[in-house]
Length: 78
Image (cartoon, helix red, strand yellow):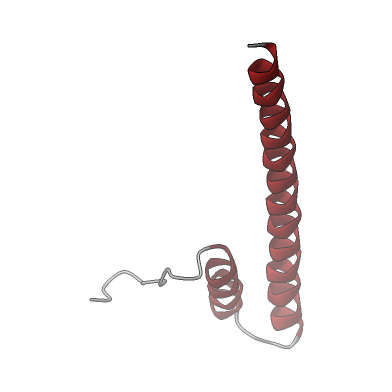
């Protein structure tokens, strides 16, 4: 019975490590996406793009990276 418990303990440890690594990777990706979306907005504003359009551009980038299968719909879009 001790061998079974040891095996379960090893598997549990591996699972925890994998989950922690996944959480860290997702966090790094989210930070990267946020930085790029922010830089996109700042560069667009610097190039003379109106605020609303620059915001849309940054939002579109964010949504496509964070939720690749999602679509951004504005009010009134059908």
